[in-house]
Length: 270
Image (cartoon, rainbow, N blue to C red; front, side, top):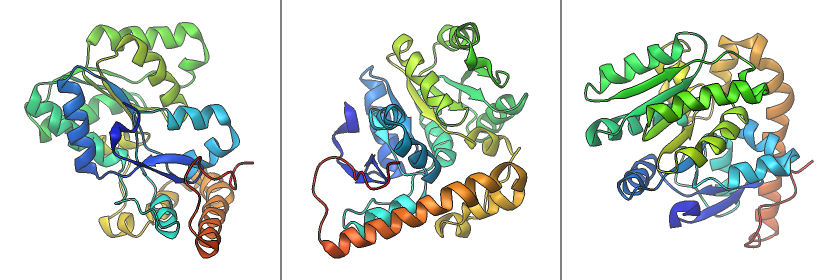
C-alpha cells in the first residue's frame, strides 16, 4: 500500500504524499478498518538533510506507507517545482486528529517517548480532549535504550503486549523510525506515527509556536528562542543552509523547465 495510492511528489530528495491532514485520517481509518497497518513519516528539513546523506535513511523514509511534509520549506519547494503539495501536515497536529479518530472508533492508542512523565501527561491531555479515547499504554524509555538489543526488546515487548491499533512514537529521527520498523513486524495491523516533539507539545511540556508563525514557516524560530542551546547548531548551521540550497535548486530547475518524472533529485545528496 506504499503511498496509499494518492500520488507522491519528489522533493528534497524524498518522496512525499500529496495529502492533507484530513486525507491522512481518512486513509488510516480505512486501512485500520481493513486490518492493515502502516507507518507515517513526517519529514522536515532536518530529516531530509539526514536522508540526503544516508541512502538507508532515505529508504527508511520513502518506504513508509505515508510520508507527509512536516516542514514548510518542503511545501515551498514543491510549488517551485510545479508539483505543489496541498500543505503542511505535522506530527504535532496528527497526534490530536488520530486520537480523535481512535476515540470515535474505539481503537486503543499507545504513547511512547519523551522525558520521564511526559508521555503520561500527553496521554492525560489527549483523553481530556477526547474522553472516549482508550490509552492502552505509555512509556518514556531512558535515553540510549535503543543502543542495545536488550533495551530495544524491553520497549518492544511492552508495546506488543498492549496490542494498540495506533502508536505515537516521539524519539526523534531516525531512532523512532528504526524502532517503528521493528515493531511493524510484530504488530502488522497497527499504525505508527513517528512524531518527534509532538508528545512533548501535547503534554504542554514544550510550547508550540502561534498559528501565524506555523503558517509562515517560522515555527523553527520560535523553538530556537525557547531552546537555543539544543537547537542553535541544528537550525542555524545545518538546516538553514540546506533549506536555502533546496529552494534555490528547485527555483533553478523550474526556470530550466519541468523536472523529469522519476527518482527524487540527487542535487541535495552529499
